[in-house]
Length: 297
Image 1 (tube, rainbow, N blue to C red):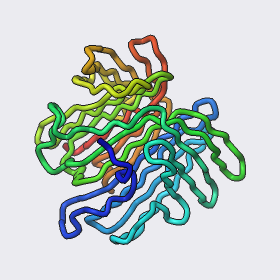
Image 2 (cartoon, one colour):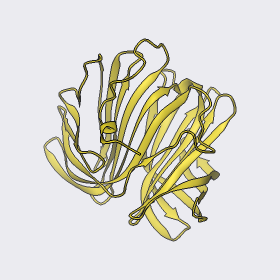
Image 3 (cartoon, one colour):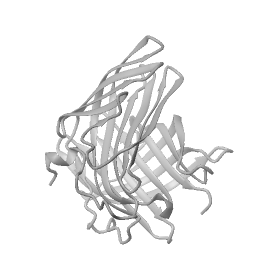
Image 4 (cartoon, rainbow, N blue to C red):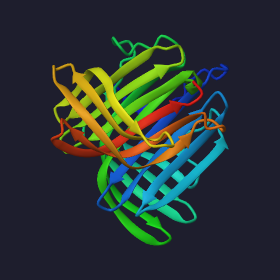
């Protein structure tokens, strides 16, 4: 059960531990009609006493970026560096993102489509047995409206969106790779995580979210994936099954995206692929086909 207080900055964390402890917020935005899609990410790295906040957007074919890293301490009480800010208007129901950067800006409001889903770390198939990803984590389907302005030109936004919030021990150096699926349709979202650790183990989790509630996944398997010559995933097919007994196939086809290096040598890269989705070849939607690839492993 989620408490409204979980939406805000967590004050309790191992301040004297050298382990990697992070608190992250993530929002994506997809409005293909207006040609606007992007992500915003806040990461409090408590073990380093720094925060990194990022917005990457494609607006009418033009890529816009805002990235800032700055020191933080225990007194931090809001996610706002003076340019990029996250406001929780009503926990689990309404959120606002605002950016005021030199050449671009946005003001976006997110409203809940469905109830949030809290991952159960103790559940079968998702029990995290080592410290590399021992986190609390919830996700939620949203709708987004607002405006993005680039060089003074306005782009209205009315589309689908998604968010997550996690906190705890998180050490990406111990990961070999992952597939994270965020497939958004008119009447549901489908979400799946397949995480491969450096020790050879794999964890899977996910859920189907509708107006009637959330149903956990019991299976998530990558059937096929194609990549271009640079190694960027282009299409992914997955077979999923949920706890109600339903089995279905998701297919993602990349229409754009960002490459986010996790290390300076680019040995670990997240491919944030914005994609067209089909569900059982009949229902069409959009979303993210995210791939973390550790090229050195």
